[in-house]
Length: 113
Image 1 (cartoon, one colour):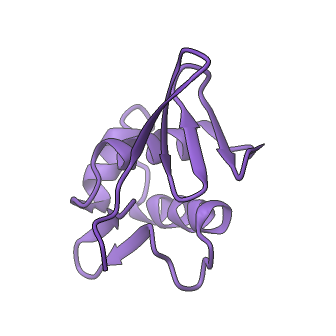
Image 2 (image 1 turned 90 degrees about the vertical axis):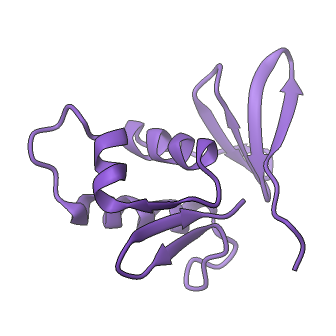
Image 3 (image 1 turned 45 degrees about the vertical axis):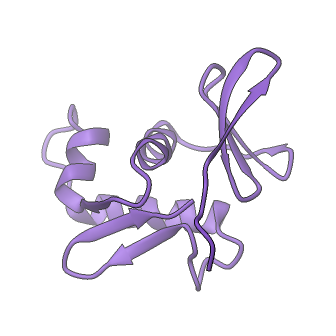
């Protein structure tokens, strides 16, 4: 299997990163899949951006909580799991066999572009 990559695109002078058929526009804070805007919550967007900036790294649930939910009092690691599930449903070709948002048992998650 070849190396997965994240493409950085110039789109109307915006900064966009893409993987698969998903494009994240950092300037407009929007996400699209196959050219169609996909509604995401603020936490989903921040989690997706964190993954894009940390590809192929094993990230613990606690590290993800700190990165995305630092201001929320006492979020649970189940919060991370629920948001990963939503990202899989929205952006995986087959949410039941994830290729991008991978579970790393006893650690947390890894994003593979």
